[in-house]
Image 1 (cartoon, helix red, strand yellow):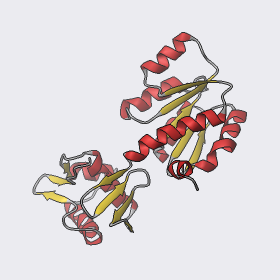
Image 2 (cartoon, rainbow, N blue to C red; image 1 turned 180 degrees about the horizontal axis):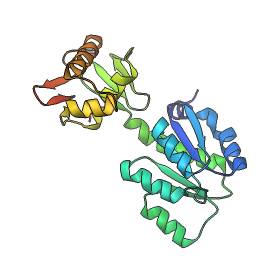
Image 3 (cartoon, rainbow, N blue to C red; image 1 turned 120 degrees about the vertical axis):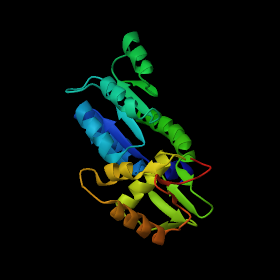
Image 4 (spheres, rainbow, N blue to C red; image 1 turned 30 degrees about the vertical axis):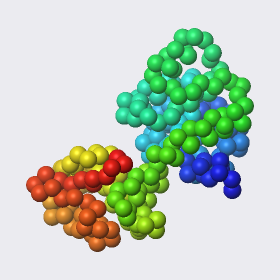
Length: 229
């Protein structure tokens, strides 16, 4: 596996396209290069799968049933300003191009497109994404934001899905305190849980990791302090 393939193999792609032939063409040409290559058939399904799989890059058509690609992009941009979004479209008129630029499209390819050209562009994006994947929490621990894996001295730490979500939340909040109420709402959603259960959850994670990794701010909540986030 060469360096280009190694970089791409870490990435999750979401491709939103209502034309089955184009979906198949691009998937056949590109899917094997990536960690995953998920297809959605319209903008509504694209939004659902975006929330479910948390892709690294989105590729989308414009004209689709239920919700078009530009409106889907607009909604995604309301909560994620940085994810690369690439448009593949038969439209080349100025109005569509300007609207795409205005809502934050990263790149615009006109159909028919060359899959190799798309792949080369994805490689360029991947190099930039790869630089920001790993968060060094302290001298011993690092967290891969792409795979949600925690490492101690480059060795994988076996933690649960909820524990991964917890660390992700602390990283997302950067050096701000994450309150117990926010933890309950984010990690347990509709479930009613006690403060004691939250403390037990943190205690178990600390046993797997380190007392120093997660800071407890008495009466306020928790945080991870890191120079890289």
